[in-house]
Every structure is written in structure tokens, then in C-alpha cells.
Length: 512
Image (tube, rainbow, N blue to C red):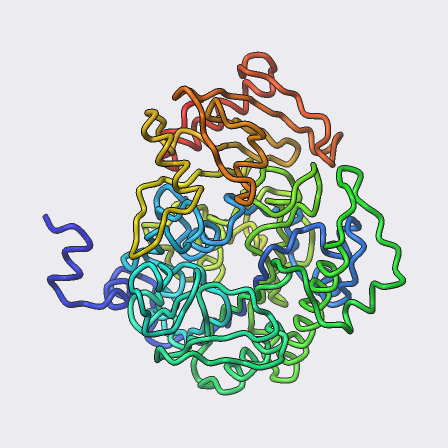
């Protein structure tokens, strides 16, 4: 029997053609609805005015929330750019896609072209498809060539036309780069398009409006727009900075002050401004009534909560993301605290659009809940963080310190799949099982902050700690129950059994 990859190679069929053959409900000509999926990078759920947590200025997001189904407990299962994006595209868990960490220089992998992604399904179903902004699912060009034809440096890359674009026909994107004032993009050639002196969020919004304006009117569109801010570096246009200069900015009870908060909030407001611009444009084009609009993010930002910056943590500030979805007349505006994880986004969106969900997807289709057709809810969202697997050697590059750490532990007999953390989030609790290599001092800092180094002087053993947070009675997660064994606490015991089911479901060998 031919496996799927061999079949595609021997038959000469395109991935889109195979998908089209598999989708029983695919129509030759679709009339809608359209899809506009906008997501920012490192935009935490607390940075929404209507959440009454961060002191942000977000009038457009606040207005949109009143028109939308708003998930106040949306979860970035693995709060890191590439793992999130792979789950978003495929509806599959990181252990299934293989994208368990960032696609980076010195780590030789990316999203497999054989994956069945939402863009593949939309294209095969008659949609005009487009992707604008940050992709971060490509193997960086410097991993493959000493002199890349696309001129990419660092973690960046051009994704050429073909199966690696996963069904997105219009392409105005880059892999990853953090120069927000001089952004660059690639289209259908390796010639880099460089933009001078324009804020990337504003520029990409303009490109999105052009895509919609120039669409074929007899064919629905599906457009994904990925803004990089408020991702570091923490900067924003001066006009948004000025809005916060005289504003009182109280610090969260679980955090310490940092100079980055003001520019972070200003970048959030810049996203709000451009999102409002997009929504007004849909109204002007008479498209609002027949367009599903989503705003979300790939992960949060700790901003010195628990003494931490950045993401990858199990805390609310890191893995809690906004998720608002609007379709007038079809989706009733309301709020829910049902845990809604990123691996459910793809199947749910396809269900809302009356398209068949590929058999490869592992998440749940919750379109019935979104559309009010049933009351099916999920009880848990799976959360996880994986260390680097090691053994990734590429052209003329030394192994990064975190890859070397994985190699060192492999020599000690430690399987990378069996450490890191795994856990569950429910409406009330966050439960985490954290396994650490013995011998890593200042574990939390060294695990995430590469500038501190990752010296490993261990004995080949792992130790485990369990943490239980009551997010209702302890919303800032400052007083966890800490235990070594699950049977030390009845709620831990219950959630430990549930977590094992999720590990089985996601083919994760992490031992409890």
C-alpha cells in the first residue's frame, strides 16, 4: 500500500487536487461566507480594554467584542510563534506536526508540505485565498544555503509558490523579522520587497484592503493577516506613545514595573486603530454582513508577571489570548469562558463555513456551539511546552545554546519528549506537570532566556513538580498548590487522570 507522501509523488497530483477529491461537501462554485482572519503576535488577552485588566486604549476592539462571540478563555496551547501557527493551519497537535519549537536558524525544519492546512481546504473549495504578514513556518534560508537567493538573513525566508504555501494564492509575507519600521515581504519571486518608513501594521492593513478591493466579485475570499507587533522590540509610532504619556498605568498585582509596558500598550493601540480601519472598509464595501471576521493572537506576553518576560509559560499572561468572532445574523454576540484552544480553530472555522474538516485534523469542530446550534462545550484546553530536540546541524552554523543543551541531555539519556511541561486549563483551574532536568540551576530563567546560557551539569535524571492554580479565587496565579504526586490533592488527582487522556490523544510520551 502506498503511503500518502508516496501517492502524491507517484500520481503527480497536486495537494489541492487530492484535498478536493476528499471533501465531500466541496462545491464547484461557492457564494460565501468570506473569511477575514486577523492575528497579532504576542498580544495577550489582558490587553483588551473590555477585559478591564491592562490600562489599554482599544475602542475598536471593545466595539467589536460587543458584536462578537468573545472567548475570554482562549488558549495558545504552546505559546510560541511556530507551534501555534502550525496548529492554526492544521488543527493538529505539535507532536503530530513536528513543529514543537520555533523555526529558527540552526534548527533544520518547518511545516511539512504534506500537511493538510486550512488554506489547502479553502482553495480546493473555490475560495480566493491570501496570506499577508508573518508566516514563521518556513525553514530559514540560511539553514539551506550559504548564499540564499532570497537574500534572507537570520530566521527569515521566502516561501516560493507551490505546496509550501498551503493553498494561499496571494502571498505577501515573510518568515520572521522584527524591523517594524522598514518591513520587507516576498511575493512570487525571490526579490525582496522593502518598505521604507512605514509602520508594518499600517502597511499590511493597506495591502489587505487592496486584496479585498481587487477580488473577483463572483468568488468568496479567505484572507489571513498576521501582524507582528506588539511583539518585541517594544516600539510603536509616536502618536500612540503620546496617548499613554499622561495616563496612569497601574502594575498588575503579580508583576513588577518595566519600561516596556508603555510602548507595548501603544503597539496594542496601533493594532486597534488598524483593525478599526479594516472594519470600516468592510462596511464601505458592503461586505460586513457576509464575512466571518476573527481577531486573535498567537500567544501572550508576561510583561514581568511572576518576574518573567516573553511567552512559553503556563501562566495566564503568556498563554491567554483574545479570540473574537463575528458574523452578523449567524453568530450571536455573547461572552463565554469555555476553554478554546488553537488546535480547535481550524476545524471550527471550516464547520462554520460548511466545509468538510480533513480527517487529519485532531481538534474539535465547535461550530455548533459558535452558531448556537448546540451546547457542546470543551471542558479542557491542553497546554504544553517542549524543549529543543537537538541534533539539528545545518550549513556552516554552530548549534545554538538551547540545541546544544538538548544534545547534552541526550548524551545523559534524557529524551527531550519527556521533559518540559504539560497541563490542562478548565473554566476554573490551570494544572501543570513540570519535569526538569536535575542540575539546571535557575531553571525558569535558563530554560527561556538564552542570554543567561544553558549550562547543564546534571546526572541524567528528571524531577517533577505539580502545580494547581484556582483561577477564580486566585486570578493572578500567585498561590498555587504545589505537590510532587497527584494523589496529594483531590483536584490534582482528577486532572492528572484527564491529562493522561490528552497525552494519549496527542501521541505524547510525557510521563506522569
